[in-house]
Image (cartoon, helix red, strand yellow):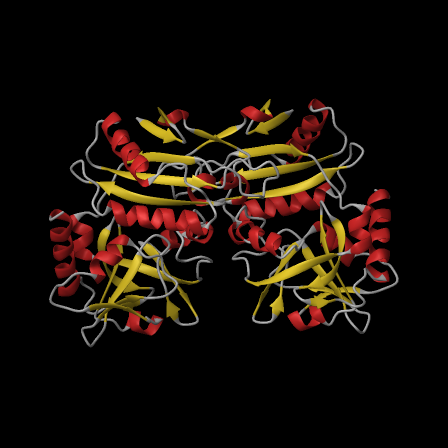
Length: 272
Length: 272
């Protein structure tokens, strides 16, 4: 399997960065992640928009134009002989002489196996826990997952699937997923603030299905009192949540809204 | 020049980590930094205490015992033929198959040139700016400096030396330094909360000099109304601050307390 580093394809196991890179020294960098399905990458423009936006905000110049980057990504799939895979693009702070100033970024593109949630998981739903925290730059897809990685032990200890961040009563996001709740009123809401603008979230917000979906304020109380709760991400698409800490959501089973949204989403992806 | 990686000394320019390391993927890791002076490392036990404490908190096992680590550090100095240098130990989250779970950490030890503040800088003092932020795990020497690195542009644009973090009126620390203020009452105080426990800070807190130095609450108001302000770190030792944003501190010149603390500190380091 190949990866790509700056300007060349390399065997994946031989793709290294020097330890002076600001990612290693200071955890400084951004990334994005998307999936190829049947040799095509759905919503690639959206992912690229976010990637270049994150890079710009973090003062990291991208050495490749969007067209060049697109060519590299498709060539990587071709070289690796796959049509279905996850693709991750990391842009680091670069090898910094003083270990603090931003240098010339290293661009790393790697291919990953994709595992979609199982039918059983979608049928049963999952338990999540909550944690008081807000990411420092929620709108930027920075590589900083210090708290998220650190919390994995607690997630496992609680036999949970993921952990939801909240601060002063307002919920924001999961470390790698967005949140949606179906309120008692039937309204479907995702946090408008302090959350990464996920592409799956964006697609759900733009569904012209039966129920209106909006971005707004979501409190911890809204979550535990919700009729339905679900999380979304590129890799997981939609996963129903049936328990939040010790509280059972609804009747403890995935509800009709999450099913409908999932089927509309699949349709939307398929229609590309 | 040599570096050390896990279990071997390598030419510094050939010391790499694989891109699957959690430092690159998720900015996950810890580090510590200390200096060798005349072939000895002052306060090494303190630095090691902090390093092993950070590693433990972040769920990162250290492959070397304290004695082994000490031997490696001194051998690195010897191999590089230096008696005065900065030494940085980074412990990453390791090469993670799924890019999220903590794996076997990579231990990276590198040697760095040391530049102490110039006499002119100590004589004139420096300007700092302020920024509303608090690090997510202030007591852990994590590699996450996302906001600190990102703010360097603002620091330069303001012709400042560093940036002081505060939240809801309470100041905590600089990205890489601790803060001290000399209040109007003559009391010398450093923030007790939300600040990394710097070894230089610890040494100043334990000086048995003329003035009492304590850890307590320090507000932004305390800073701008202070008689003297200074920052401390391993590399910089003590640097007087004479301007905070647009406010001149005291008469705009370094005061007598910072001078005295610096001379007591030098004496303490020299007495080891």
